[in-house]
Length: 245
Image 1 (cartoon, rainbow, N blue to C red):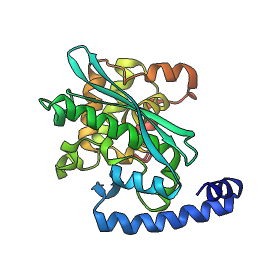
Image 2 (image 1 turned 30 degrees about the horizontal axis):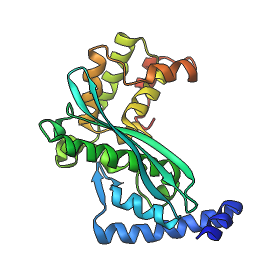
Image 3 (image 1 turned 90 degrees about the vertical axis):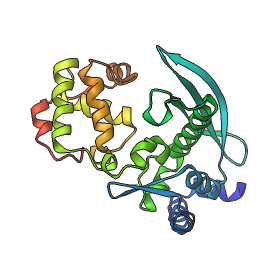
Image 4 (image 1 turned 90 degrees about the horizontal axis):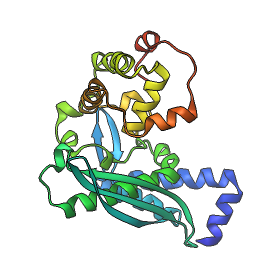
C-alpha cells in the first residue's frame, strides 16, 4: 500500500484513474449497504462510506481529542479527528460539535452527544482529503451526519430552501449585520458546511433566518471575513440571482 500511495502522489494521471476506480467501487458498496441519505434529490454519504473510501487510499481516522463544552445554557461535546496515512502521518483533520440545543439531541444522554461529535469530526476530516473521490462517484461532498437527523427523517423539512427563504436571508443579513451579498454567501455556506445554496434545506434556512433575525453572528465567520475580504456587490443583485451560488 505504501508503494501504491507514493506512485499515486507522484503521477497525477494515475491518481485520477485510481480515484475513478475507487468511485466506481464506492457506488456499488453504498447501494449494497444503504450508506447514503437522499435529501432534495441529492445523495449524502454516511460515515461508514467515508471510512470505506478512506481505506481505498490507505487512510484511517483517529479521534485526537473529545472535550465537554458549555456555551451559555447549551452543553455537549467538541471532538477533533485526524486522518492518518499508511505511515501514520497526519494528512487531514477537523473539529465538530454536537450540542443539546439541536432539536434531535435535546434530552439525549451525554454519551450519545459525545459519540456523534466524534463521528462528525471523523467524517469532516475524511471529507477534507477525499471529497474529490466522493464527487466523482456522484455524491454530495457534505457528510450525512452534518445534516440534522430531524431533517433526514422528515421529507417536508428535507426539501430545499424556498426562494422566499433565500431572499429573507440576504435581506436580514444586510439589515441586522450589514453584510453585503458576497459576505452573506460565504458566511452561510461556511456555517452550514455546504458548497451551494442549492444544498440548503428548509429547516437549515429557517435556522439561519432565526439566528440572523436575532442579530447573531454565524459562529466564527466574522473572524474569517476580516481575513478573506469581499468584492463590492449589492445584496439586491444577489437576491435576484439563481440560487445556485
